[in-house]
Length: 100
Image: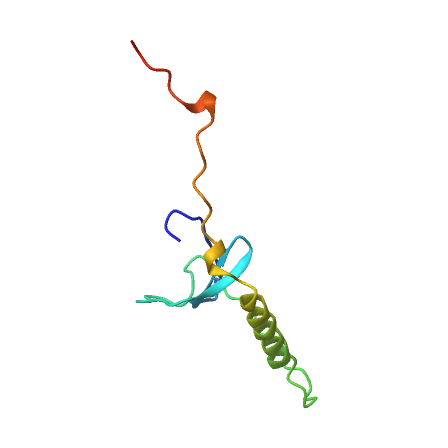
């Protein structure tokens, strides 16, 4: 993907996980080689939430499972051979005029 523009999406409260997107399509989770701090220094943490009464249903876990299922479904449709576009041919007006 050399020369291509990619997008990194991350949570400023957790810099250990970064998602790599190419043309609005999820590609992979980026692996951090060395992490100095796990939180962006300019971010102030939100106040802690008040615990909800126990219902027996972990909605956050259900959302994570659904997100992972959607991500896997999206990856199945990616054909990596189509990610590289043919180089654009220069237009006539883009070519330099020969100097005599």
